[in-house]
Length: 438
Image (cartoon, rainbow, N blue to C red):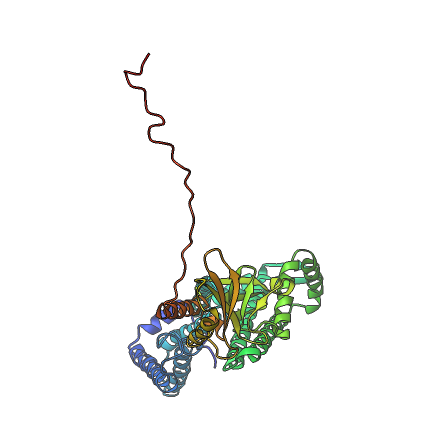
């Protein structure tokens, strides 16, 4: 696909004022309508409801990449047809660069939003890309772009023995940005395919493969972009040495977290979906990145734990070899209670709670002789700790309370004996009367 050559601004305005421009406007409107209908039809046939995370389809019909790409392709075909018919072109000289800029904007924005969904900088990057794309389009249409490029060639400086111009820097930045966007697009698509349907240990292995794949694609893309603009890659050896010194001195923690992330994913000691306890925080691992691990508590709070902590400190996991978790509760009964008969009834009541496992069997043990009651410790197992532990313990306690009430077994209250000293005689301190006064 070729872009129409730039024309003088006055020539372009004069061409737009001709009556034939109305025909072009009608054809362009038909092109946009056809593109809209094609996107609408594809959304209905391929995705119902549409996947907003897709590169091609957005939340609306025109905010994905598919609409501007179809519009650009159809506009180019319509332009060729009009040229073959001898129709002078004016509107399409403006429309095709506009659609090309729109394709670049939508592609970069959709890829960045997919690759970094939680980043607050994506919005600022989107505005920056939009400004540069529209500025380049305006310079091209008005015919000022060649003059601006010539002026940029005159601004130059030397880095070592290699002269570099401002045009080289801008072209290199644009080339690197384009290559990185394409690399992110490919890595995001491959990551989605790798992680689809994976669970447990398989999910962890595919996650590390996706991270390695993304890093490799970005590195290769950046090197290709730098080489494409004429930068000698051997000059990067100095940068590589400086980067190694920086990692060794100032980036030790960051490097340790990245290495620890790959170790965790490769060893599979911790996996996405495991129930763990780190320090005083307990929850389910929802994501493992190359730098940190996200742990979500049953209360909804999330902790971002650096991977180095998970490697260098003790981590309690409830699902490494077995997902079963032992829980316990304590109840006190009267000393006159038949403990042997009550234990069996307590085990049956606990086993009737839905989330309590039948195997291992719940247990009831006499663990203490309290000042006011016999203390019974009750133990039971569950296999789904990620669904909460306090709720199942509450259900067990309610079942125990209901059993004790049915059996007429009381839970003794604390008792205290208070000893009062003997009271003196009432008239021991009686005041003397007037007759007894001397």
